[in-house]
Length: 347
Image (cartoon, rainbow, N blue to C red; front, side):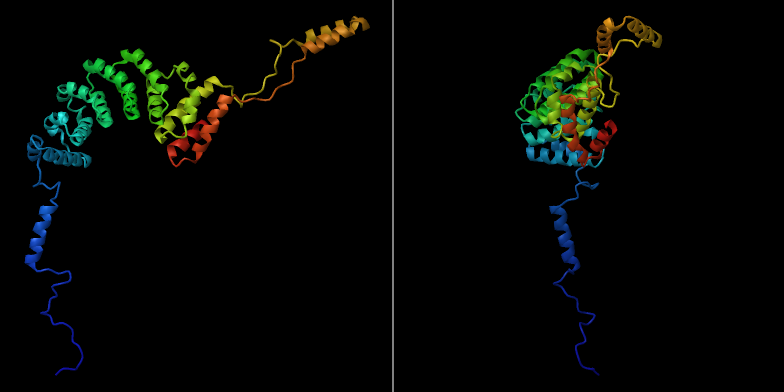
């Protein structure tokens, strides 16, 4: 007997339009989703052998897809060193996107696969003349990553060419390559110092921090190279990236401590005698002046005036010293902890 009112849906009723599909429908949707968005890093998808065959393909689309997968695997920490021979062949590709991805891979594995990288040095040298600045910079990075002394002259030539490049990004990469070459062959120090001297004259903020890092690594004792560029570096300090600011502050504070007077040092009277006379000698001179009588009073007063040192003058800060402090002060409010810490350390 019904009690009246709506009893709700029965147990056999199953809605089909709102969020619940039948087993057949869900299986079809799952299959179509797997076709559209395949799991990129699953064990059954794109194994290394498949990637090698894609890299050997004549179609740029397949090569581009393979390189994207490889770079994604490298970014996740997976070892892709066995793909080096297949990847390095595509460095001659005319597709700029493929070239960029290939160089990203080579920068990562050039040090581990030096023998294979040596076989492609001529290709890297051609990359230094590519119209794309990113390709030129990447080619130089790969060359500087090959830690074989026999190619040091080739690296030196590449750095010298890159120093005069129109792109500041390429010049910055050249500055980063200098310490690597110096550690590989210290005998090239004189030539590297000349390159650093040219880069110190660069007016762009992108290069400033990198060349100061190279200076501190190769020739930190060459203070004479900073004289000509001191004011420029002070004025660029605020606009340089945080890493560059730390390097420049370290170098400029070291320069200031050796070239400017210490404002905390006790003041010294000007025109003070070279040595202090003893009390006995002073007493003898006073007794002689008294015996000379009134006729010698004027001469005695003149001698006393000569002996008296001038009054002490207050400390006057050098304008260049003031320039450094003026440009470094805004960095105390930097959001970067390293910048604010280095300023407090040197304060």
